Length: 264
Image (cartoon, rainbow, N blue to C red; front, top):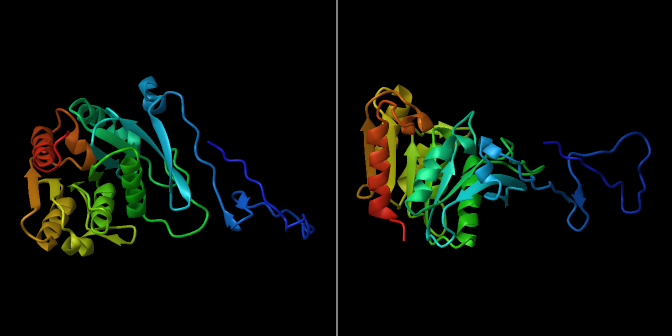
């Protein structure tokens, strides 16, 4: 997708001499803050025409996130799903469909500047900030309970976001989340977590397994769960049907959701 950008040269088109003054985005004259355009829907996104009428966009950190929203609009519990590095919302599609089928609303999004999402021109971007924006969006759509779910760097982002989210999340699931990613530290956020947390990781996914144990130990007791399943699957691959450990991983998430955020 290409964004056509324009620039204003002064209040009355003065000061325009001396070459091009184009910027990365139009400017809001009332605030002098660059703004970006929301992405348009994509026909057959994720190679799935059923998503044509399920695509949504919402503001985040000066830009816009592209996402799909599945499930019955009357559902009161929403799962906000964050992808791992090198992947986008499409990587979660089959899992998201299964969760929608059992009664959840599911919002899967592309991080700012990735996939179909558009990063803002100014300000500081954080992955956890996108997670917070996504949680706010599903609440605007009527969700009462929100569960944050992330894979790998998405797992890091949901843990950091959950430590400060207001109102609090109903729960947070880190699938192969790492302790630190892109200047955000989930291990530092862990002591501030007050909501139910599931750390899900494969036994032979060495770095992620070590980080999961470290974050679990740093999380206040009582509402934390560490589930180590067979295999070496990482992130979303751990939930791929038929993969080593996938049955145990899916069962761990299902049990966590049933205990803490059963669909209503």
